[in-house]
Length: 85
Image (tube, rainbow, N blue to C red; front, top):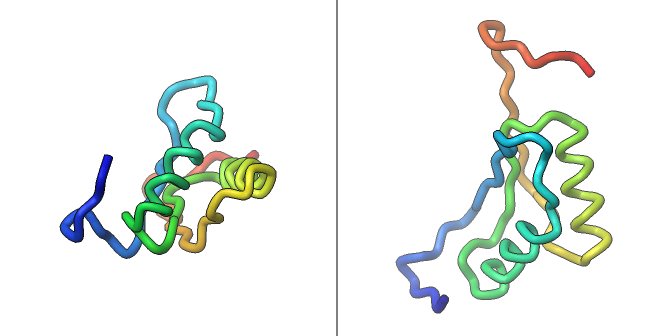
């Protein structure tokens, strides 16, 4: 896929998978890496992941030399608290 300027966005977010068991991140992050090299975005973020999910993305990214996330958008809500692990 060739990207044009209208496809550019300064940041892109990964959201946690809804399906169980969790997806293997290597394939997803490989596609993200390709888009990064095409100039689709400058910063990668993760949104609404629990700590173990962020750790897994960072671990897989370091192992495969993928762009690391530099933005974290968390869900902190008294109405919908996250379960403790």
